[in-house]
Amino acid sequence: MSKLERVNIITPTYNDAHRYLTDTIVSVQRQVLKENNLELVHTIINDGSSNKKSIEYLNRIEKIKSVKIINQSNNGLSSARNAGINYISSDYILPLDSDDLISPCYLDLLVSKI
Image (cartoon, rainbow, N blue to C red):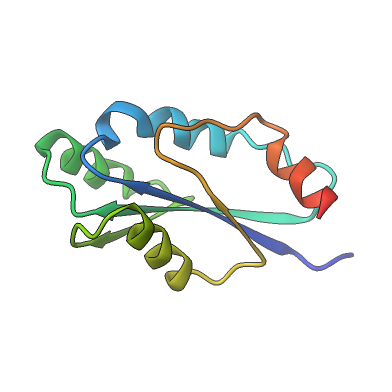
């Protein structure tokens, strides 16, 4: 049996989590990992959101087992991505914005081509 490789998806968010993040999380959770022996982790970086609805939403999704949330002061998109990358331990990292979606076979195909 081959080694289990970890793929970590890094998703920064700032004040829009309540609008877009559900669809992004669902697109990550729907990944079909046939060809590769992969562990999938989704790390969301809250870049100092001040919007009440976003904060409430992030507090609710913190309970999802496959999602990890990192909170930081607002330092901008690149800082949030870097915080996520520095926080995790992973074989592969995929940056994914909070309003982006990926198809169900995206990660399997991507890792098989690497």
